[in-house]
Amino acid sequence: MKSAKPEEISVSFKERLRETGALLEGHFQLSSGLHAPRYFQCARFLQHPAQAEWACRELAKNIEEPVDVVLGPALGGMIAAYELGRALGVRALFTERLGENMTLRRGFEIARGERVLVVEDVVTTGLSAREAAECVRAAGGEIAAFASLIDRSGGKVAFGVPFYALLTVEEEALGPECCPLCTLGITLDKPGSRKVSMK
Ligand SMILES: [Zn+2]
Image 1 (cartoon, rainbow, N blue to C red):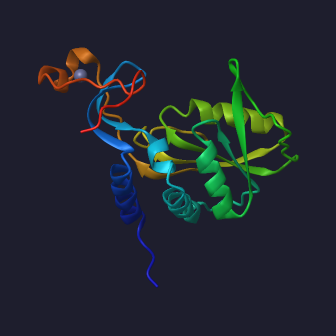
Image 2 (tube, protein in one colour):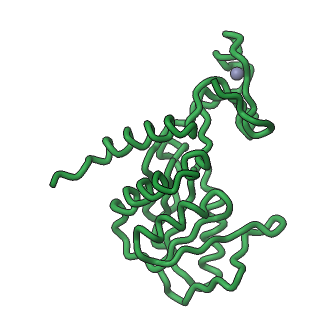
Image 3 (cartoon, helix red, strand yellow):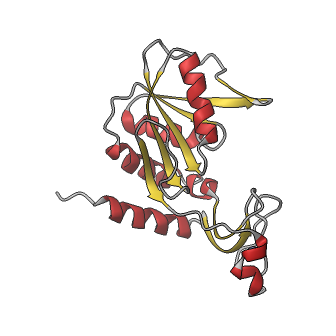
């Protein structure tokens, strides 16, 4: 049986993101204040367990490093970590923010030397993933690799260990002063501050 090529999986994933309303196209103000023609709301994709299971199974196929534990920073990384843990047959933990600090709570333990895969739903700068990795190291674990369903950095984010993404997209965000969509007078959506209006 011929297995699908990575590009075919990316195309299929993008199509599924569109179908589930997780990939919105139009004119959006991101949390950074920049404007972009695309907005990812990965939770809308992950609300479908069968879709989440499919995506994480495909992502798991690419991972070459031995992994003992999968860990995702809450909330974004929780579902991806859980499904990736299922796909890899290992346990799935999450870190959470307590005030400013990312912490490992709820009785979760990482044994010394355990190899941990840190996963996010969407990586832009990789800050949350890095903070989660610090928790892993503080607990005595080793970082085997990072993974994300969507890499919005266009492949520019660097973790110093292998990083796997199911879909890599270029960030097309621009300041309002040089946004062509503003010039065209297209209505601006602010998905972070209120409900996204759907066509
Ligand atoms: Zn604009």
